[in-house]
Image 1 (cartoon, one colour):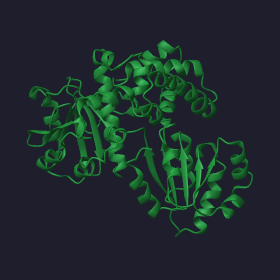
Image 2 (cartoon, helix red, strand yellow):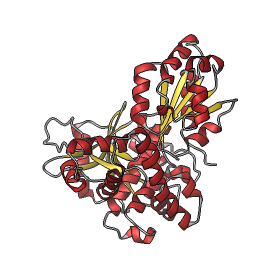
Image 3 (cartoon, rainbow, N blue to C red):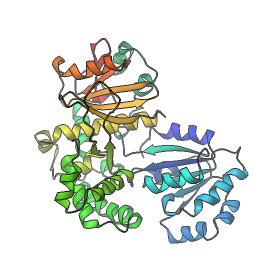
Image 4 (cartoon, rainbow, N blue to C red):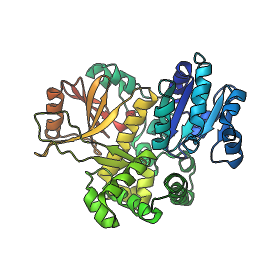
Amino acid sequence: MFSRHIEPFLFTLLRHFPCVAVTGVRQCGKTTLLGMLPGEWRRFDMESIADRQQVLGDPDLFLRLNENYVIIDEAQLAPALFPALRVAVDRKRGAKGRFILSGSSAPDLVKAIAETLAGRIGLAEMGPLTLAEAWQLQPSPLFPMVAERASPGQLVAAAQPRLPLLQVLDYWFHGGYPEPWISGDEEFRRLWHRNYLDTYLLRDVGALFPGVNRDRFRSLIQILGNVSGSILNNAEIARTLGVSEPTVRDWLAIADGTYLWRHVPAWDRSPHKQLVRHPKGYLRDSGVLHRLLRIADAEALATHPLRGRSWEGLVVENLLRGFESAGIHMRPFHFRTRGGAEIDLILDGESGPLPVEIKLGSQTDARSLRALREFVADHDCPLGLVINNDEKARQLDERIISVPAASL
C-alpha cells in the first residue's frame, strides 16, 4: 500500500461538497485509495454488468435507497445516472461527503458534471505515483510554500534533497504506475506495460470512442513517444498516419482526456514578444514512454538521444501532481519566442505565473537563464525555478532558485 499525497485534499473536498469526482488514468490507484476511506462506503463499478443493472435499472430508486457513502467507479460509462444524482444531491443539499464518482476518461465525465452537477461537486485529479510517493516520503513543503509566495531564501532552506540520485533515476526509468513499481521483476514490468497499452486501447478508447481506428490510434501513441516534449506538428503526424489534421486533433484530445498524454498550450500573454503559438505535450508516465521507445534499462536511458525530453516530462508531471495533491490548481504552458528564447514550463495559478526551467544535469549555466530572467522581470513573477540534479538547492539570482529534483 502506498500513501497517496492527494488523500488530505480528498477529505477536504468531502467536507465541503455533497459529491466529489476523482479522475485519473486507469490503474493509477484510484480504486485502492477510495477503498481505504473510513466509513462504510459501497462501491459500484460501471464496468460490471451486475452493478450497472443495479444502478441504472432505476437510478432515482437506487439513489433513494443509497443516499450516502456511495462510490460510482468509471462513472463516465453511466451518463443516465447524472440527472438522478443531481436530484438526490438537491434533496439533501446541506449534507456533505455523500457521493464519490471516479473515472479514467475526462471528456465525458467533465461534460456530464458541467451539465448536471455544477456547483454541487468538487474535483480532484490523481496520477500515478510521484517520486516522493514511490519512495514513501511525506509531501514536499515546497508546493504550498511556492503558492504562498515564500521568499527565495526560505524555499532554498526547505528544498534540500530527500533522496539519493540513484533512487531518482530508478523512478525515472520505471515510471509511477503502482503495480509494476512494487515488482522487482523486470519481465513482469515489461509485460505489464505492453498489456496496459492493449487494455487502454480496448477499454478506454475502444469502449468510449468506438469510431476510432484502434490500429492507427496505436500508431499515434508510438508517434507521441517520439515527439514527447517537443512542439507538435499536426500536419506531419497526419501525413505519417494517413489521416486528416482534424482527425489528429481529435485523437490528441482523446489521448489527453484519457490521461495518457499531457497537452501543454503555448503561453500567449506576453504582448511585446513574437511567440510561437503551437502546443507541445508529453506522455504522462516515463515508464510508458521508455517502453514505447524500447529503452531496455537505465544505462541505455542515460545515453538515449531523447533522454532530455523524457526527463522534462517527468519533472512536469511531478510538479503538476505535487501542486494538485496540495489542493493548488496550476495550468501548464510552455514559452517560446520566434527569436529562440524558450522556457520549458509556465505554471499559472492564483499566485501568478511560475516559470520553470528543467535541466537533467547538476550544473546550471548562468547564460542559459537569460530567458527565465527576462520572463520574471517582464511579468513581475515572485519566483523563477530551475529543476535539476544538483546536490543542493541554490539561489541563482534575486528571484531565481535552483531546486534538485530529489527534493520534490
